[in-house]
Image (cartoon, rainbow, N blue to C red):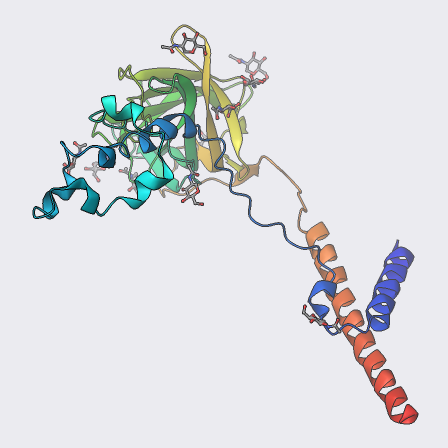
Length: 340
Ligand SMILES: *[C@@H]1O[C@H](CO)[C@@H](O)[C@H](O)[C@H]1NC(C)=O
Ligand SMILES: *[C@@H]1O[C@H](CO)[C@@H](O)[C@H](O)[C@H]1NC(C)=O
Ligand SMILES: *[C@@H]1O[C@H](CO)[C@@H](O)[C@H](O)[C@H]1NC(C)=O
Ligand SMILES: *[C@@H]1O[C@H](CO)[C@@H](O)[C@H](O)[C@H]1NC(C)=O
Ligand SMILES: *[C@@H]1O[C@H](CO)[C@@H](O)[C@H](O)[C@H]1NC(C)=O
Ligand SMILES: *[C@@H]1O[C@H](CO)[C@@H](O)[C@H](O)[C@H]1NC(C)=O
Ligand SMILES: *[C@@H]1O[C@H](CO)[C@@H](O)[C@H](O)[C@H]1NC(C)=O
Ligand SMILES: *[C@@H]1O[C@H](CO)[C@@H](O)[C@H](O)[C@H]1NC(C)=O
Ligand SMILES: *[C@@H]1O[C@H](CO)[C@@H](O)[C@H](O)[C@H]1NC(C)=O
Ligand SMILES: *[C@@H]1O[C@H](CO)[C@@H](O)[C@H](O)[C@H]1NC(C)=O
């Protein structure tokens, strides 16, 4: 392996040295970056655009209803009209003059592109008994809900994040000793209330707890769900199959993004909830408002070794190539003096 890298470095160095080219910007060992690929094609805007641009042009061909010429009353004859250049380019437009007043249909907006959700922290205290923090949770959550955009007759994904400003609106740590819950609430763009509830269940014999279910109540707003027709609240649920299982008096930690599927009231799959930067605990009895020691979902991960090794190899390669190039140039200069 090291031999291979060594051979590779030397040959790369030789290539540079042999090349007489001072235009070294292409020889830095990195492949050319492809230009950032902006894909506007996925947005089906074209169908609405073509009809909108053409209709307004027929106006200059006939004089009677000219709103633009009002600025120049002394010039009633149409020959002097300033916007005459356009009509020359489009002589076959006369037929559409029959429908000049059709207003262009406003393009139906699309849901905004999802961005990384912000992290937030919430906790619920057992205020009726001990004031202990029974549930504590820190995460970034993005909810993805497909919906029908009526004007476009297409299904799009709405994304709804739990904003860090959301507040704890309820919870339960006492009524049922085997389950605990926390409810978080926030305002959507239309000032309606969205909420999400996480319920945990403990197993005393196994001395652990886990997520039991997530319940969501999202009211579609004009920003996240543009073009939706049915604005009644969307009620979704995730029924857990032992997610986030953790020993009692430990917290569960997971940085990576996890996707949990959602179902609607008829138990049909609809959307998903994406949770990242997660740390949570339930069934706590401490009053210091701190997490118990964490059990990580990715134990003993050493993901940094490979990138560091690659970085070091690249750095060495660059230095070797530079030195080789400088030596080569000196030699060539020396040859040049000799030949003169
Ligand atoms: C370097 O690049 C410039 C422009 O790209 C070119 O005119 C010049 O000939 C190149 N020099 C050599 C040594 O190839
Ligand atoms: C399309 O591209 C333009 C210019 O690159 C950009 O301003 C606009 O936001 C893009 N639209 C979408 C929907 O990505
Ligand atoms: C819980 O906290 C409240 C407010 O800090 C306090 O009034 C109450 O006495 C506390 N209850 C217990 C059981 O410590
Ligand atoms: C919407 O699209 C579906 C197929 O994608 C089609 O069957 C239906 O007729 C369309 N509805 C309208 C109102 O255009
Ligand atoms: C919506 O999200 C799902 C899962 O994340 C994906 O499979 C689907 O292609 C998305 N639909 C659109 C229209 O982007
Ligand atoms: C929501 O409430 C805020 C503050 O009360 C107000 O400024 C804003 O106009 C409201 N937005 C809508 C869409 O009603
Ligand atoms: C609790 O854990 C024990 C031991 O792992 C298991 O046998 C039992 O079925 C669990 N109870 C529930 C309600 O899941
Ligand atoms: C979640 O839903 C997707 C598609 O709807 C499916 O492929 C995947 O297996 C589901 N995951 C789980 C854990 O059920
Ligand atoms: C929490 O519960 C555990 C186990 O029941 C107990 O050992 C510990 O003393 C309790 N801590 C507090 C602060 O009550
Ligand atoms: C819960 O209790 C902890 C200390 O026990 C306190 O620091 C925290 O502010 C309380 N949180 C709420 C929402 O009352």
